[in-house]
Structure formats: C-alpha cells, structure tokens
Image 1 (cartoon, rainbow, N blue to C red):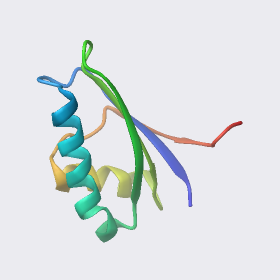
Image 2 (image 1 turned 120 degrees about the horizontal axis):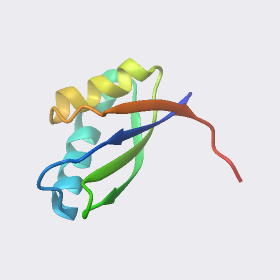
Image 3 (image 1 turned 120 degrees about the vertical axis):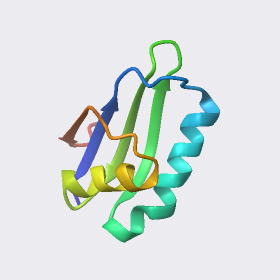
Length: 83
C-alpha cells in the first residue's frame, strides 16, 4: 500500500498532548477509510506537524483527518521509505 507524508503548517495551540490526542482520534477512525497512521513528528515552536500513513489514496488519508478532528493537512505527498 502507498505511503503518504502530510504536513500541517502553523497549528495553533500545538502541544505534545494535543498532537497525541489528534493522532489517537485518527487511529479510532482510520479503519473506515482503509488507512493506517504509523507515526507523527511535530515542532511545538513553529506549529508544524508531519504524519506518516499507509493509505489506498491521498484522499483516504485526508478523509481520516477530516473525520477525526478536522485538522486537514496543508500538503500530502506520496513517499517511499529509504535506507
């Protein structure tokens, strides 16, 4: 299944707890869309978040965020794992 990396820019009120909570919500609904969120990274200072998932399409990955918490990514790109 394709891998996608998304980027959320300037998320207001970003904290480690907020990111963990949003990720937990993604995990709760991901199965409905055939998606599996794997990992996330964030920078609390600049409000940036990156999420990595396996998904059948970019649209499916976006649908999970939209349904789970409404924080739709600014950009979603297909990626390949490197060494």
